[in-house]
Each structure stands twice: as structure tokens, then as C-alpha cells.
Amino acid sequence: MNMTSSPEAPPVTHRPALFWASALCVAALVLVPLWMLLGNPAVLRGHPLLPALLVTAVVVGVLWAVLLWRRRRTSPKRSVLRSVGAWAGRVAVLALVAMLLWLNPFAYLPSSPVAVGSASSASVAEESTAIVMTPAGAPASRGLVFYPGARVEARAYTDILRPAVDAGFLVVILKTPLNLSLLDGNQARGAMTAHPEVSSWAVGGHSLGGVSASSFALGNPDVDGLLLYASYPLDSMRDRAGLKVMSISGSEDGLSTPEKIDASRQLLPLDTTFVEVQGGNHAFFGDYGPQPGDGEPTVGRDVAQEQIAAATVSFLTQM
Image (tube, rainbow, N blue to C red; front, side, top):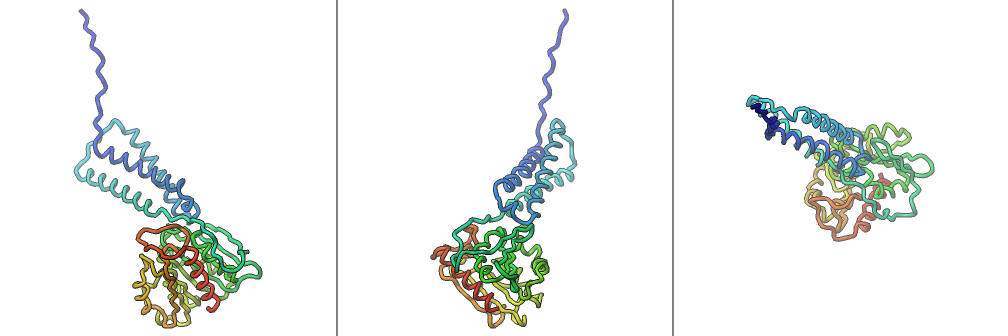
């Protein structure tokens, strides 16, 4: 009697933990950058470095997914050393994705324009690494280069700085690499060089941006003024000759606290002007919504921003 054997079922492939760790990395590399690119308009409106990194992450994730698919039925044996290296590499990939997620910027949230004077007639030109706001009429002879705060979109400062433009000042708001001004602290120089018609320059910044502006002003004697929004320098500027400084802060700031601002007095020139906006907090110096770790304001955003804008115009006019 002929005996026919039934075909054997294909062997069940065991998926090692490293495979699933790789799959997790692939998902993170693809989904997180896509979510940032498609879900936050500030990413594509900012400095091109962040979108380039996100697109690169997606491409790497897709290529890795293809490689995983091709090797889905294999389970290569590894030495202990190679296994440790493979796990370390995947942990590093997840750490990189977490860093990219942390870099997701605070997007501009339009509020009512700061009501100072008549309706604005300024022109606004958006470039790849800056927003240039030009006053109407004759070319401006005085200008301000402004560094945004960490992870804050440059557009978030257009409304609060518009009154300065209406007062006759050219204002350049920098789009900093990865929205971190410390990555290119000398970026203001390019903006100044691009506008030779301006004979007198001030630099300014919010929070971390103010730190970069302070360092730039300290090392560049052709800067006439320094405008600090809820910020302070890291190094002493007491001996920086010919520099006018204004420090504007909020009494309810939970990040650049009143105590930190008060301590910065010993680092700034003796004739520095200090303005404290009663009831204002850290996020009131731009239009990007609330910020983690900030204090609770006791005054309306519009009220605080009118004071900030008025103090800014007064400082630049007297510079």
C-alpha cells in the first residue's frame, strides 16, 4: 500500500527581541517626523535644517523597513559584542527620535495685533533664514536684529515688533537652526551685512535668544543697542563701551524669574534700563501660547504686549 505523506507546515520563525526593537525604531523614524512635518506648520516655515533632518529620518526609516522585510525569515546569530552594539544602536536611534520630538517648535498663534498707533503699513518678506519687516517710506537707517526664544517660531514675534517697524526701524527676525539660537550665535552678522543702508544696529532676543544677542553685542562693537526680552547675558557686559541696554521682563515669569533678572544687573552696564511688566509672564513676549514651567499671568496678554511694544519703541528711538 502506497503511503503518501502530507506536506509539512512551514516552520514557525521566532522573532527575537532585537527584531521587534528594530521595528519600533522604524516606526519611530517614520511616524514621528511625518507627524511633525504634516502636523506643525512652524516646521516648514522655519529654518530649513529641521525639515531636512526630519525628511532624512523618514528616508532612513523606510530603507530600514525594506531591509527588515527582506530579512524577516532569517535570524542571524550574533556574538555577545555584536548584540550589545546592535542594542546600543537602537537605543541611540530612539534617543535621536526623542530629540527630534523635543525640537518640535512652538508655532505662531495669531492674536490681536498690538495696538500702538495707527494700522501697520510695514511690508513683511519671509526668507529661508529670516523674516524681514520693512517700514513704509524712505529706507530705514536704524535696525533691530532679533533672536527668537528656544523652539519658538520666528513668526511669533512679528506682532509684538511691528510697532517698532511702524516707528521707522527695519526689523529682522532670525529663523535660527533647529530654533536654537546658540547653534549660530553669529547669525545676526549676515542680516546686518544684507542691509548696508542701515547705519545703526541693535540686537535683541527673547529668553535663550537674548543670551545669543548679548554674546553678539559683546563681541561686535558696531552694535549700538541690546534689547532683552525676559533674558540676561551669561558674561559680564559691564565694560562694553557705547552699548545701550534695555531689559524688559515680567513679574510672573516662571523661567526668567524676577530673581534671575535682578541678579543680571551686575552683568549689564550701569546705565541699563530695566522695565518690569506687572502681571506678565515668559510667553507674553511672543505669540505662541503657553509654555511649560511658566508662571501664571495676572494681566491680559494684550495689556502686557502693549507695554512691551511701547518700551521697545522708546528704547530704539533713544538709542
